[in-house]
Amino acid sequence: MRTLPCLVLLVFLGACGGGGGGGGDDEPPDDARRMDAAIDITELSGDFTCAGTAWPATAPDPLSVTGRVTDPVGMMNVGGAAVELRKTTDDSLIVTGTAATNGIFAFNVTTAGAAIPLYRKATLSGHLDGYTYDPYAPFDGNHSGRGIYAPTAANRATYYAAAGVTPDPTKATVLVEIFDCIDLQVYGATVEAPTAGKVIYFDDSGVPSGSATATGSPGIAMLLNVPPGPIDITVHAGSVVYRAVPITSRANAFIYTPRLP
Image 1: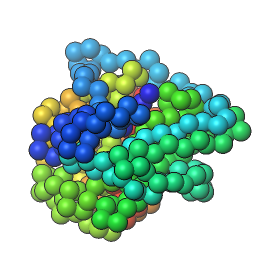
Image 2 (image 1 turned 90 degrees about the vertical axis):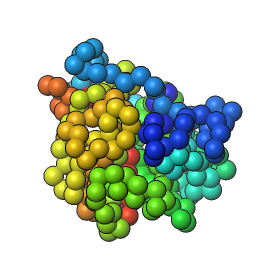
Image 3 (image 1 turned 120 degrees about the horizontal axis):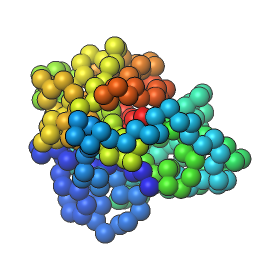
Image 4 (image 1 turned 180 degrees about the vertical axis):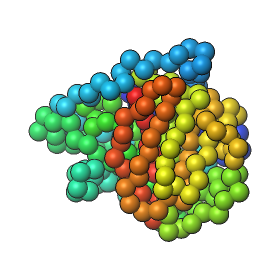
């Protein structure tokens, strides 16, 4: 199951798994865990065999869609958040509910047999609205588990401080995580986002860097101060240009967009 990974940042994020409000002993899609291995495309070439291949257009009915709401700084669970699934095509509501005290949410989505392009939204007082845009329309139980990041404003500011930038509450923060076809994070990828105030990359130690020019081993880029509206994001991994994912920036939001070739 493709779940929201635990971003292993030395200062910004805590350890994965149990303790400190993390995943504990629960074993539903634990978004406080991540794959520890990252792939260096300069050494292993990466698996890009799925690049450009169409995702399945059908889905079971109903489809189980699951995940966990967390604050990415410390990977603390955000229990009690209101969670919505909405269609990316027109923002219409698919289903709504409330995350459990451990941050987990689970829905059965009526699909009529078709994979539905959707995004996830979490809201809770004291936290930024969190959004997650899937890299594809979820098409089976192994491709429908993905969580949502909903940090506090103070925790968001730690990312900006590392880059020497002041967060603008009228704009969004976008976390781009770059995977290859077998779900390994990609080292050395670059991201273009013309509307972003600044693009930064996380270095090999998992810390945002103001000087890095490509992803480190976590495979993560962050777009700072992105104005509301459609976001044009282009990802390059060597000669591979990643497929586009339609996402929308919103004021004072924290958006997670995992990318696949």
